[in-house]
Amino acid sequence: MTDARVADLGTLLAGPVETAARGLLGCRLTAGGVTVRLTEVEAYAGSGGDPASHAYRGRTRRNAVMFGPAGHAYLYFTYGMHWCLNVVTGPDGEASAVLLRAGEVVDGLDIARSRRPAVRRDVDLARGPARLCSTLGLDGAAYGAWLLGDGPVRLRPASASEPVPVADIVAGPRVGVTGAHDVPWRFWIAGDPTVSDYRRHVPRRRPPAPS
Figure 1 (cartoon, rainbow, N blue to C red):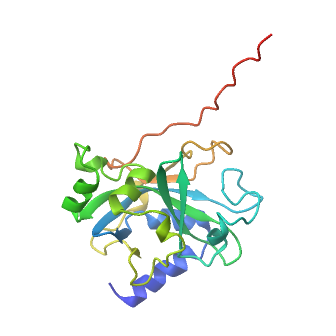
Figure 2 (tube, rainbow, N blue to C red):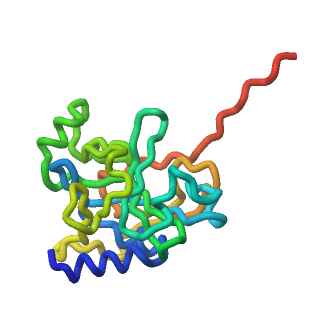
């Protein structure tokens, strides 16, 4: 992989989050001895403009890395059991990030299987954001990691021999968000079996108060 191609990826990530999200499809992410080819992502804009974003209400200790610079890892813990990985995008100081939702394991398959022994099909190993992190062995220790360098978590452009045609990129509503439900900022590779299922968020109804 040439330095020029990695630099081009850095330029992509520093641009608008929607463009960056589309460009991440087909890219390769390596961690913990496993490499996945990204097949599904989800874009989130910054404070004030996207109620589904973790940065919507401004900077906090949890989301600080989202404010840049681009190319760093933003991980968060959800449901008290799962880690999810985002790639920080956009100009420095303007929070935005792309959630990595799914991928195909293209290297380190035996390691990936050992981390998720209950999975029967290889296409399900990294099918969903929490599964992707588990397959790569990622947790909060990777928060803030620089992804375009030679560190333990590395993001690289799509293989020159396997570009993702623009016609193969599909857009639709984001999954499980509590605001801006129908913003079509989830992007995936059409027909890829590793793409996760769509589930619209359904708010929990509080039981009626006793009379």
